[in-house]
Image 1 (cartoon, helix red, strand yellow):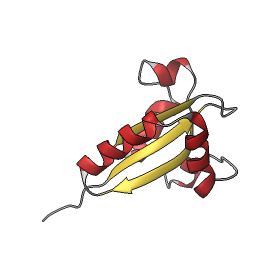
Image 2: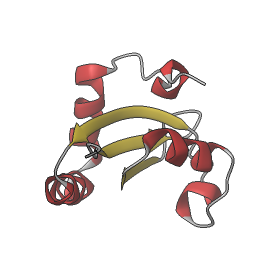
Image 3: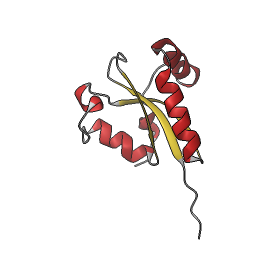
Image 4: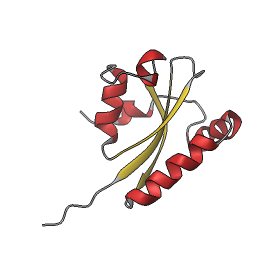
Length: 99
């Protein structure tokens, strides 16, 4: 049986929305958990990146990688505008994930 694969490009931020991180994963629930629990050394652990504020879903990994690279190149203002289109309150979207 064929299982459909999904890929996610996401934006996370810290508690006061000052620091942003753009990433890509094939399991958004697991990846957000890893960020929130500081299981991965590096930028997100150092800057306390704990809040998922935006994500997009793809079925083609190449398109997801391309989109991640595109967003990473943007200035902060453009990234803010992207988040504001779907999440103007900048709430933590991972609160909607089922346990």
